[in-house]
Length: 305
Image 1 (tube, helix red, strand yellow):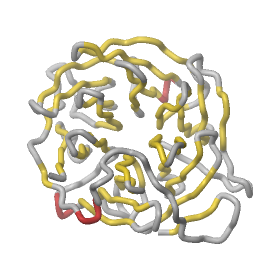
Image 2: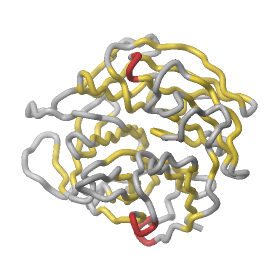
Image 3: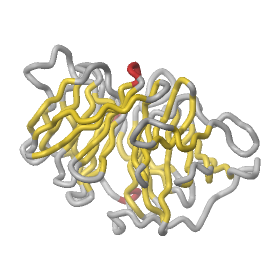
Image 4: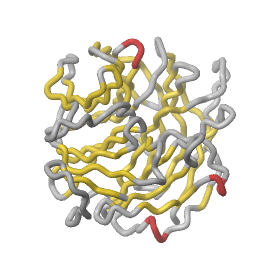
């Protein structure tokens, strides 16, 4: 793994980063994940097999899912392994994130919009539509702003609740293009500051930025040719899924952001075929992983216990 500074062109090992996220006592490089019962995400009203492009764990440990094949957002219960609700969208969704309160947001790239959603009493309902300019994919939320990744034009932006761009970034301090397809975003806390991680399979990098979109580090590794979903798990560790394809395998790995070391956790040997995203329940110590292969209609769940 190579780590690159934002201000220098040489590569170096970055040290001194401490995360205040949960799961501080789990070293994923030393854990063996155990697969539990799968979660059904197929609805009777679905017209196609399920392709989940993003998912998020809600405060009550329910799972919210973006299903691009069926143009819907779904709510699933890991405890029962069943689908609880399904909400139809006007077009294909992509990214998904939690918002304060019982709310969430989903990007709809081809309509250049963010759709906010209410999650109450295990039911989903549409709320506000936020129209923006450009094809929006990855999304998260920090300090009253959406953090949004765009493919056309390729950039990362902070967007307010009215769809206005507060700040955006396309290049680093030496004018190198940062993004091509910033499709997955993870906001976490390190020390006392918010930090943004962005994966981009177009540039084959994971970029670390401040909450004001200052580039802090970039990560590349031969095993992460198609980096996609991200999840911070504390202790300077970032879970990363690699989609896989003709030139790389589909994997779930842990990136140590202090040393740059990448450790594989799951892959083809565990029948992981094509995965875009993951999520982590800190209270249940469970990792949820999707698999696109043959329109898989389940979510896998792995525990560290």
